[in-house]
Amino acid sequence: MDPQTKPASKSFVSIFALPLLLVLPALAAYRGLGPTWSTYAGGWATAISLLTFAVYAFDKRRAVKEGERTPETLLHLLELLGGWPGAFLGQRLLRHKSAKITYQLVFWFIVLGYEMVAADWLLGWPLATALKQAVL
View 1 (cartoon, helix red, strand yellow):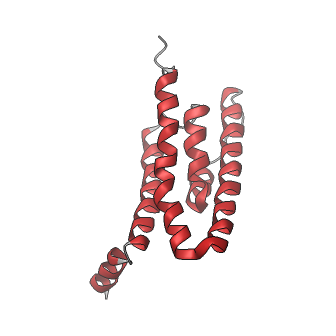
View 2 (cartoon, helix red, strand yellow; view 1 turned 90 degrees about the vertical axis):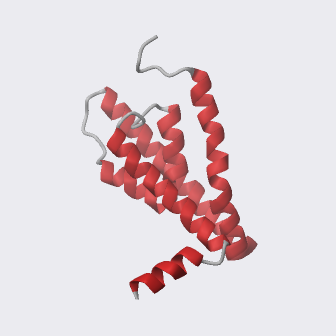
View 3 (cartoon, one colour; view 1 turned 90 degrees about the horizontal axis):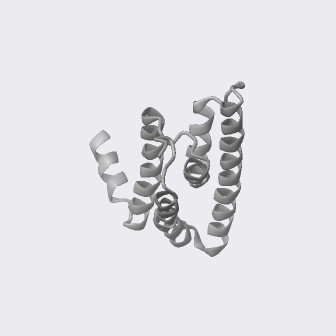
């Protein structure tokens, strides 16, 4: 087996991880913003994720053709703006940016940030409060 080719079952299983990663942010948005504003937030997350996936696909195509590449900072900015679910899918379905360790560290730091903020929001901001007291 080619070392670059991952078994389909692992890719298929990793896609099931995405709904689990979306539970905390979705719950936090719904409980914190209410049904109307959480719908807007969900619409934003969907749109920016679709855009991020499209940019990943474009960059993957350019990488194969050895063309001018999309800067990694732009990819990370799209992830930070809420497109990390689209990036997650792009990494798994397109097998793009999934092996570069430094890229993955930043990507997972962004995902962890979303998860931590969502958990903190749901718990009444104990981490943010403690951080504020430590700084001030």
